[in-house]
Image 1 (cartoon, rainbow, N blue to C red):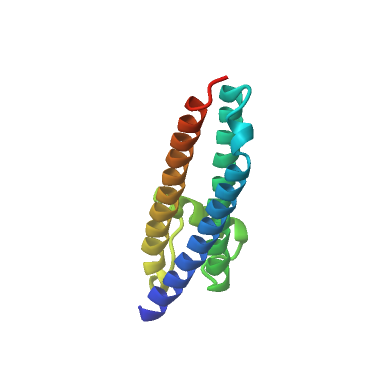
Image 2: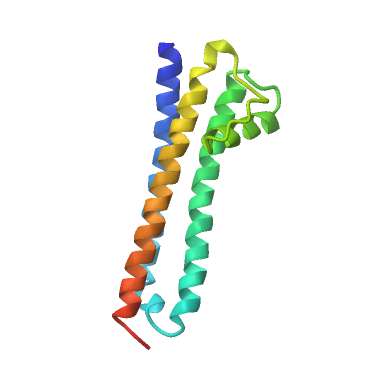
Length: 144
């Protein structure tokens, strides 16, 4: 049990580092683009930038899925990467169909990946909301 908790905690830390790095890069890029985003066709720029941010954060979460899937393959829980990716994706989204399950020796990881997904999606959502709030505020302060 301790091994599962330690490994799960390490995987959670890895995925959080990825997400925080992605948020940091996005934040720096958006800051650099500030004057461009608030000038000209603001509505179009808002939509394009929102789409880019959503895809960027989805990429961060996808890397998290790959990290977990890789761990499941290394732990010999699944013979094929496709199965590991499927299990990781449905578990990290907390959907958890139950058609694939981990062996009893590793089943605590199922709960940890679900908790990890809650945190990753919460961080992404908080970033989206703050991004939209700040951009709308900046655009309203700079009408064209």
